[in-house]
Structure formats: C-alpha cells, structure tokens
Image (cartoon, rainbow, N blue to C red; front, side, top):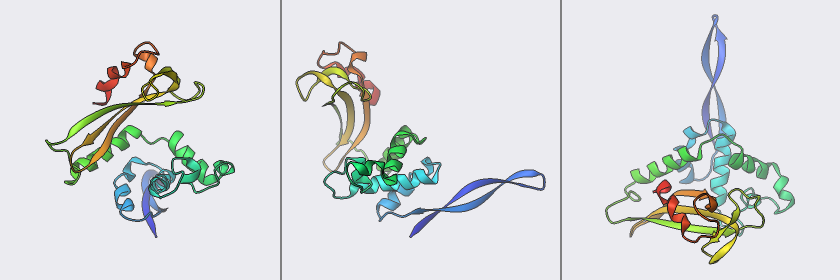
Amino acid sequence: MVLCWLVSKRVVQGGRRIHSHRQLSVAHVPDPLETYIHHLDPLFTQRNQRDAARRYLEGLLLPTERNKTLTALANTEPVLGAQHPRAQGLQWFLSESTWSPAALNTQRLTLLRADPLTAPDAQGVRVIDESGDRKNGIKTAHGRRQYLANLGKANNGVVSVSSLWADERVYYPLELEPYTLAQWAGPEQPGAWEHVVAEIS
C-alpha cells in the first residue's frame, strides 16, 4: 500500500503563475505507527523526509539486537552496510535534512497531551535527570573533558539534561538538552548541570 501526497507545482497558464498538483507516494508502515506519523507529516516538506521518518521510526520499534545503529535501522551489514543507500538516506535525514527537531517535538507533545491516556494530570510529576556518556577524544559534538556523574569523575564525554513526565499510568520524555559543561562552570565541577534545568523545564 502507498500513501499519496499532493505537492504543489508552479505552472504558467494564461500569462500568470498558478499552482497545480501532482501526486507522489510514500510507502506505508504498519498501523498504528502509520496513523501516528500521519500527524507529523506536515512538518516534513519533502517526500524523502516523510519516507525516511517512517523507516527510522519503524526501525526503532523492530525487535533487533542493535537497533540503535543506523545500519541496523536500515537493515544492512554493520560495517560495509554503512555505505548502503538505505543507511546513507537515514544519515542524511538525521544530520543534514531541513526539518525542525523543535517543531517535531512540540507536535509530539501536543499529541500526547491531547490523548486522555497520556495527558498530564495533577497526580504526575516532571522529572529532571542528568546523564553523561564517555567518548574518546573531543570530536563528538558537545564532547569535552567534564564531570560524568555515572563515572563519578571527570573524563572525556557528552553530558545532557533531560526531562520526562511520569504518573501512575505512563511516563514519556519531554525535552533533552545536550551541552558542554565548561559553559556553565569549571570542567570538573560536579553538579554544575543544575544551571541548565531552566532551559528544559
């Protein structure tokens, strides 16, 4: 099955520009994922963005052993498969494409808040958490020698602060803010991440 999209195409008729439409198709993913992602489609201005979004989310939900890697999401061989067009397409979608992560997250939260099963209520809480991941070198974005709480010491790594909503029924992430700890305090000072909580709360 395919899902058809109308895309505007400029043509000249009678000496003036008008808009006509032609149809492009995007391959379906199984429901309920297709129904869900349909609400996100207006945020993707290109057909290949909409298609890659489906492949990406579908890959995340599949029960594979290495679903956090692009080659696994694209169902290609781990090393040489990184050059496969499917893997390259996902790499482009995540790092080079023009869609807005902030707008996408806003729409995601709007959908969650509109659903009675996931809407926040007075019984829930907002949880703020800091996490750090050790990285070799400093070429990774936001990578720096800084205090990593999970190691209990300073090391080369990436630190981020996240927030999530939780109650007795459900929990889900709200925001994630990566940062370089040295922006806020000395690179080895524990607890300095608290200064960025305001940005995600």
